[in-house]
Length: 323
Image 1 (cartoon, one colour):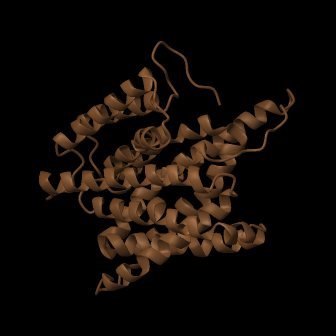
Image 2: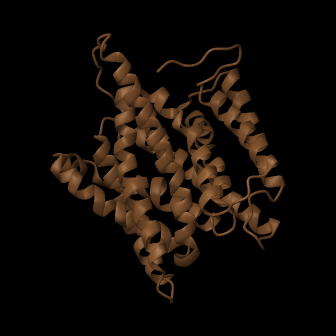
């Protein structure tokens, strides 16, 4: 998810080159991690849609981050990173509201109207918004290739918003536009969170940042979630869905993501952005019977091309960025 943006902010220790005998195994290991991470983050949209249908948007987001906090806190202590969290707790908690609390609530709201696959495709625009925020905030002016990518990506978003593709049955196009706007607002939150992390949390251990993010989001969402808590107790299915998204898609995924950065490098880790929608669309079609329209696929290809160019992974004139 947005956590891809952390890749640009993490300081990874240099590693010695692996021997010829260990290189193939190392290559296979990071590829497995990449696929597992994409599968987990793709499933988060499925579980969020199931949970939001019974909990509502804010309670869904609050339960997700609360469960992730309970999962990550013991790891923070066991790995000896509690002191790092104490040192940087203020920016970690504050950034957590932008990086987890608000985006999760926006996506939960959107999933009340649009399909999980469509939400995942829109989530893939996070690196584009990240490039815009970095340009405005840090003066990281994109080159011609990246500007073309931004234009292409936003054209793809406009194409999606212009048609009612990926709607729940009975939902109207007006509600779909609000849902798409909520997804894009979540992406903007992720982009600002990435720049704030770059400014205030560079060099802080990944687990301390991740746990602090979930704690901050939990504190911010607790009161609104209690106020809007559903009158009827959600079903076991909804609780299990949120447990899965909190533990597997948030807690475990954070650990897997930072291991991927360490073993494969930030550039390769960033490619998870393109795989997440594939898994999300597949899960939605198989487990929720979501329709995959030709228009959705066309728009998804346009957006992914835009993201690839805007992040610098692919450049006009050929070539890709190294890890």
